[in-house]
Image (tube, rainbow, N blue to C red; front, side, top):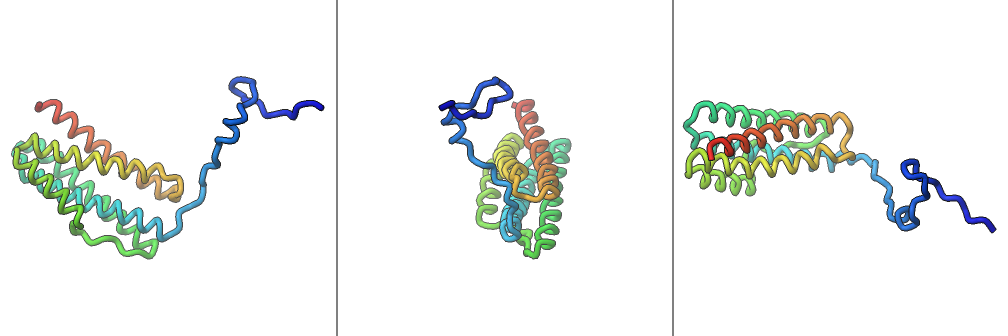
Amino acid sequence: MPEPRRPKSYATGTAPAESAVRAERPISTAQMDTSEIIDKLSDLAQLDVDAFHAYGQAIDSVEEMDLRSHLERYQSDHEKHYVELSRIIREHGGNPPEFSRDFKGYLIEGFTSLRSAMGTKGALKAMKTNEEMTNRKYSQASGDMRFPVALRSILARFYGDEKTHLSWIEQTLNRIS
């Protein structure tokens, strides 16, 4: 009896290994339900609130006007993200977090305050750590295919802002070190 035909790979012209075929898992294309969207966006909104307050600590410790203006702009970006996320949360029937720090926010602000006491370099190092966290969270969210496309687009734009913040901080730290 002839061996059953297996599909050939277009790239190699050979049939895939049996173990590779079995190892494939279907990609989830299920959309998030409304409560999960609200929860995930609320977490991001709180992260932006905490970042906003951390930037306030850093700004207070930086005397150079050029550096302060960048930090103030990035602080404003976090506020804009919070406002936009809050609007979307409300549109989905949820209540966004208050514009105040949560427990984690107090820890972040305390860390930033301690580092900022060491001057401009300390403030920028603290903000680098904070921006690494926001970049990680926005990267995950913007790449989550379960979010509706329009929402992923907004999250990708915010992630772009976060990448800009982190890049500038890293470049500035390299320049002043």
